Image 1 (cartoon, rainbow, N blue to C red):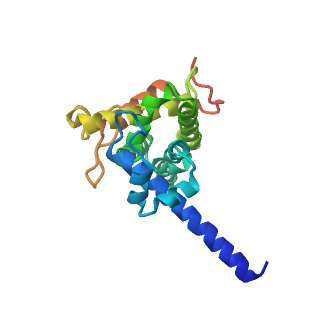
Image 2 (image 1 turned 135 degrees about the vertical axis):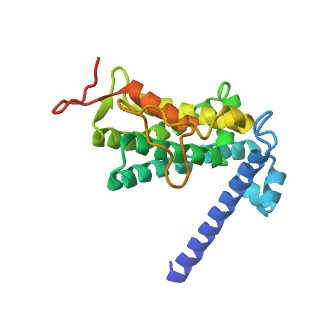
Image 3 (image 1 turned 90 degrees about the horizontal axis):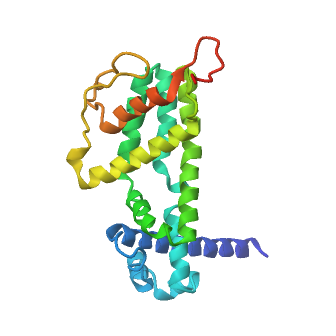
Length: 254
């Protein structure tokens, strides 16, 4: 095959991939607009193709049936690579460690940033909507499980770095993994509650007691204080971890 032929084949493959992605993103957009009810019944081939600016023929070139498309759409929505909010946690840990921030201040900054990211993520409502299908759909159940396992695996290293630098260790029977699972559930639950009942989730609280120490610092110079999520994270940190004694192995108290 000539170089020209390889270029033409690559260009055609890239165009096909772009079409496929645009059709999946169009379906996700339809779900974001109408995520409740009998999930996925509103995602019809013609509506998706029109939303993506593609032909119905292009749709059925990539998927033989609407059911096949819907299966791929669920996988697309729940793709762990889409977890943008977790990347900020790792970056915030690294930045805070460089700047010599206190444990409580690190917790506040990371938790607030993560909570705001989850609230702003357009895919989070779709995760909630798909829960209505997971009970009777093994594929959705498996994808949700993989989604949460990927989320935990991305968060655990950041929490382990935080514990190590500030001399804390999980208190048995808790582990870094269970700490991550608890925080994820709390974050998503509060994001759901604040969406429908904003007054129930305070965003400007006085500083709580810091983990194992005195009161946490006040808001920073930019005015961002303690929201309910960050205050609860400090509380859980104190309840689920222990200070590591000087020279100790970090087993925590039993």
